[in-house]
Image (cartoon, rainbow, N blue to C red; front, side, top):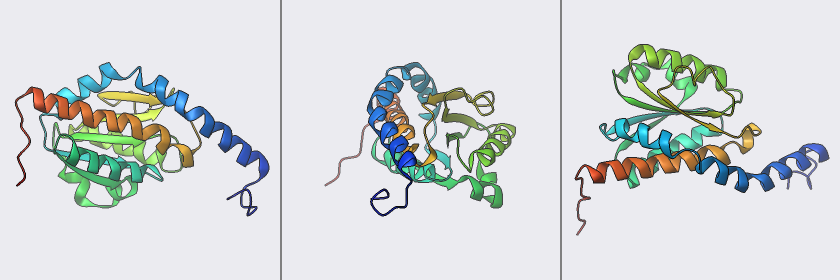
Length: 187
C-alpha cells in the first residue's frame, strides 16, 4: 500500500520487502540458539509474579504482547511500560532489588533511553533480561541475560523481537509447572 500510494520510495519498498522475505529464516536461526539463555532467565523470573516490560517505538507493542503472554502462560502479571515513561514517572521506582525486568531494546529512536533505563535498573538491583540487536554491547554488558536478534529497520523489529519474548513466556511457564504449580480450574 505504501508503494502504491507513493508514501514509500521504490528503494525503501524493495529493502523492506527483502527484509520481510528474510525474516522467517532469521527467526528460525534465532530460536535455535536461545534455549540456554531463556532457561537461565526463566529460573530467576519464575520466582517472581510481577514482571516489568520496557519497550520503545513499535516494541512498546511487544511489551504489551509480553504482558498478555505472561498472563496466559505462567500466569504472572506483566507491566508494560514505554521507555520514556520509565524516565518520567515514579513507576520506575516501584522496581525493587531482584525484580525481573524485560527490556525489548533493538536499535531505533528510543534505544538511547532504554540504555539509560538499563543502567538505572542495575543500580536498583533489578534482574535484567534484554532483547537487543546483534552486536549490541551497551545493554548486554549490564543485563543478566541477553538475546541478540537480527538487526532490521525499526518498523520491522517486532517481527524478530516478539518470538524470543514468546519463548521466554513458555520457559517461565515450564519452570513454574516444574516447581509444582497447577493452573486453577475454571467452572
